Image (tube, rainbow, N blue to C red; front, top):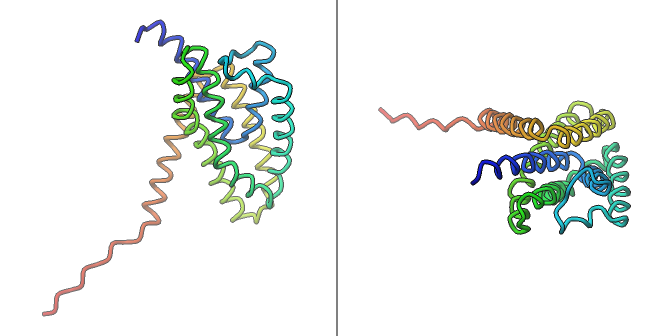
Length: 205
């Protein structure tokens, strides 16, 4: 690949990773913010994704964002949102990534394929971390800390979005680091919880 073309594509890849990661915490908030920024000319989306800037889409994203942000503050509701989010958040991540890949790729099929291959896993990284944190919080506080943790996640999701737009390479690097640390934690936990190997019976004398 031509170095000049690669230099143009890398920031778009990093932006897609960053936006997708935001969807791992809040599925609708990054869709709303991306649509608004594109509407006012601060982000460039592929031709097939201009619907994200439409009045109907922005209203839908706004209502869904409000429901998600409010519902996530209640222990009984946040579990249902997380269950739905296991499918919804990677889907939103893939959509966001593909929408910003397309302008640089000049190929809708490549952009959509990369959106699925790169965007969905990028969204799963913070979603997995969030689920692990919520499980620990519920175990230790019985759900009492859910509103505070949810509010912190709102702030982090907004901060991630701002960082993804302003410093996409930094945001992509942080997502890669988080994925590496999460994978190490899972492997360590799996080794800790693995049952000890069964000992062979001693031969009779």
